[in-house]
Image (tube, rainbow, N blue to C red; front, side, top):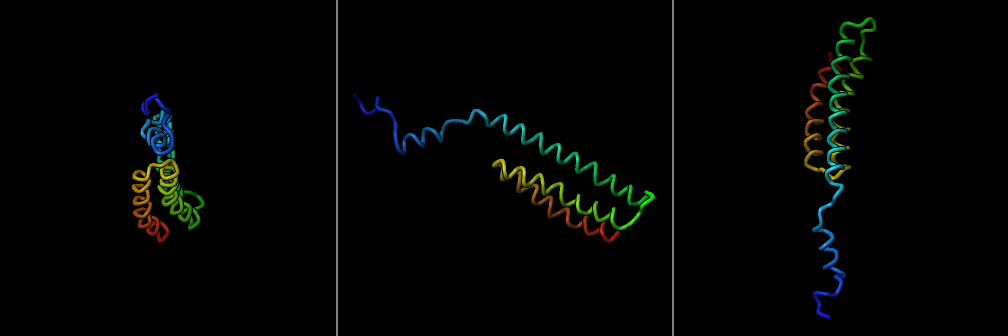
Length: 112
């Protein structure tokens, strides 16, 4: 029996396993992207509704604007957490930067 015919063990087996492509990667990536799209669409709908309701609604006040500012920061943060949890650090980093950029509009909304 030659060494090539023997089963790989140790380091060689781990390297062979690491080089194989994960068959569930495509489905997991698709599910993650759909989840992030749902989070962002919800975020893009809730914040303007709260702002419009705070400006024109019967119960105008600071509480509505506080919630709008909270959701302004919460949307990208939840997307960043979902991306990093599913091993997509580049996408998660992009949403972390967006979260930090949303601090300025949130402060402007609270002072509004």
